[in-house]
Length: 420
Ligand code: HEM
Image (cartoon, rainbow, N blue to C red; front, side, top):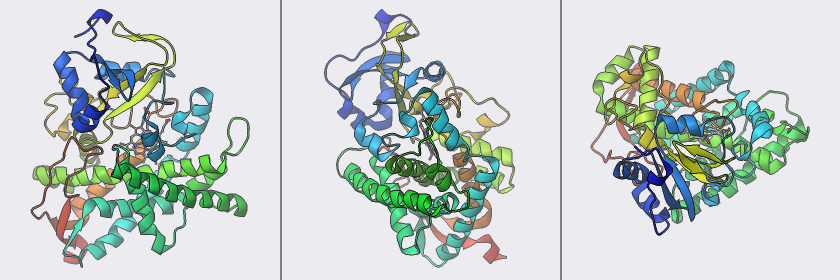
């Protein structure tokens, strides 16, 4: 392990961005292994960047106010994900103030309401699935989640627009980890989604709608100087709760894959033990690849295990590799939900960031994600029966964001209710 600056491995030569795109989730872990170090320097996205892995790196990176997310990721990725002027691009008091607004949408009652509409949409769709020969879970879950998210947030969509809006939000996620056509499609979707959501914000402000929906909370939020957010920023923040809810479809598809690969767990979960369901959900978020890494820039000069980090230096924390780190996990290559039963959650677990939800940049929607994945797994194990026909269920580590290749196809879907 590297403990002093002179030992820090450094990749000399050319920029490694193309290698990163080619190697996907394996880019960082491969180099940590090769250098036998939890820190190395490389030139990525045209800039010297320090790459870190493991529990100590997570604790270091998530020290309060240590790293800004400003200009830390390429503009094309930022545009498809959090967007300019979003909570993620803020720091200090301005960040905490905006983050408090997001966290006010994450109360137990608000989360329960989302799960209620999610389950209604799922069961409605289940009726339709019974008439189909087969369905693809990933795209179906994206559509269900878009409808549920809009109902929960108070974004009213005519039926004929609901599906295309869901597709646009899904295209933002699909395009974020790539260059070329997938990214361009995402940019077009971004333009359409922005236009639609700006109209929603303007309408709420004009009509002064009564119900306290998340969309209204965002539309009427005031910054620290008491001013409403400009319409584009408010629409962007509304997108920042809708799009990531649609993104949960990936964890649902991975959850279905895990049930398929581990039938003993399907039986265990059908008994409805909440602690087991939660452990299974955490293991799905650990085991399967989603966000590969988190990037930030040092707010002040600092050092990691003796390696100096000048102010402004980009630091990249490896999520996928930290989830497979043998220093933090026993048998990390195996899918073992038991590891989360009656055990503290290790610091090296950061599928949605680390640190504090309220004061740091940790994902505002982590609790919602856990709730939704649990609800979906509950439906897959108790509300329905289905077959898994032959298909390509491989998960390519070169494709970001990853997914089961076939999107997880289910056939002969039957509602348990219809069977009794
Ligand atoms: C689908 C699963 C999700 C994944 C994998 C995910 C992942 C992440 C990650 C890695 C971060 C960055 C943390 C950092 O910069 O340190 C983040 C931030 C964020 N996420 Fe999520 N997220 C998910 C779902 C959600 C949901 C459902 C919502 C809202 C309903 C949400 C809203 C946000 C917001 C607002 C931020 C910015 C927080 C800040 O900068 O303070 N995410 N998420």
